[in-house]
Image (cartoon, rainbow, N blue to C red; front, side, top):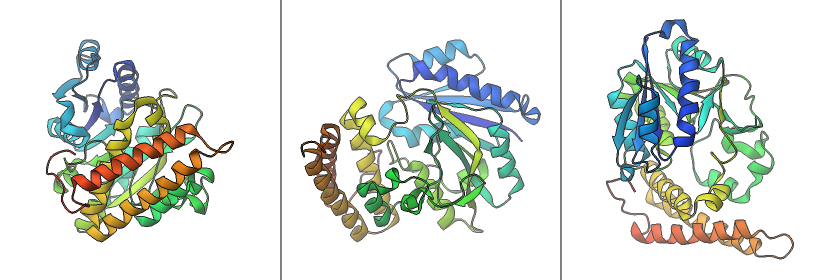
Length: 330
């Protein structure tokens, strides 16, 4: 089996080296992959010298350059097109693979013929689960996210969208996994038509998992393998949206809002899309008001909610209330 690792980066000069080193170490631990693996870095128009740093330090790594406006999904597709492996490994440049995890991920994929996609656990520097299994987004998931009950009571039934209440210490068949650390069979990836290039920053991986479970026969499975772990390189990456907005500004919110609206419109119907947008507006308005309250309010939360309200309203207008979407990354 030949393995191709695809890393999509943008302004990750301070992180790309540790990520590549961890991937190379993980590959070296698997005897069957000696001389049978490749690493491909797809750089989305970095301005900090990420591509040059990777090209200079790692002569055996293939560098593919794409413009930033192309979006994450297009960049990932470019990396997959350049790959020659039977299995594709997608890794975020913000993480480093932990020892012993990759063999478990590949073993699960190989020993379960029905499994087309397997994802690992991405944890924080303190070991808390950041990205893992998730149910497909929908109105119930939107309501859970707006109330914040799941994040307040993780690993309970209130955290339903992230499989709270289920045993996440053993491999589990799930709706979707994060492609911050995941493997997919190349044949299945091509049969699914690769990532939908319209997704600029988010939801491309969720959309691919949904297509795998709904359009292919026999139905392939998506698995979460908790023994395969990757760790965020520091506390400034892979933050939740409120923290990321505080650090990086409105672009974080704009990307998530637009990609979520596209995902719901594509996979459900216009009525569900309108309902999801309405829930977002009403929920964020309530969060904004609560954020302004003295003593219990939070200025950071209020500013984030104001940004979400603005971007959601603008996106609804741009798409004629969710009835039309562009054919290019949005």
